[in-house]
Image (tube, rainbow, N blue to C red):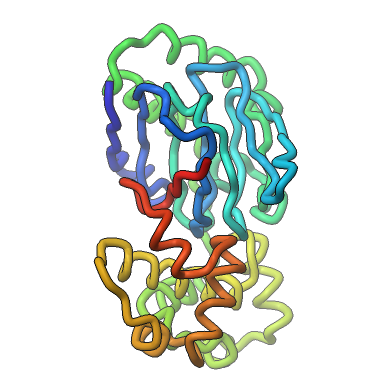
Length: 271
């Protein structure tokens, strides 16, 4: 039992940041808040025959999906059920990478889960059945990697999108989309449409998400945080701006985030 993550071999590594396998006892808490990341995700539940996501309100309405799903990127945090996160595995796609697997524009995948069998039919069903019969995590990951490689079409992102992803990723705290678009030589409308099709969100929101992710990475291991300094270093106008962005992406304030931290940066234990 344990948690294992690996980087796939080329050419999959250009599309998938990591493959992971989780086989752990049930958590003591019922729910977890999962922070948004810029890429889509593949989830295969090997413990239960469904996946569950809950609304971020007092009612915690449940949305049930298939055991194997692909979706995202998510534009806000999600709440998941730890009871089904006992034996589960999947893939974290790089921005734009999921299109290579699904053939769908990323806008179709945003903020929803699509059953893998709805896209690949019996091949996806057979994959999960084989994974259920594979006891060792490294063998499961190798099997998943081979399946993904067989189904990938490896389309290239537009050079204009790749340029924007590199520029925003290198300096999210100072990214200015208008200047980027002028460098590319396109209109903002035309470039925005292309970026949303290939990445799943507009370039401005992508820059905001990357700026938020930079702050999360910077403060996660800190015992004490000067939020005014963090806001300035992160490219925010002031601390109130930072608080607004935390509420937007994490569903909580920066102080609440620090209090809720668990052993994994993207998963915050709830009740």
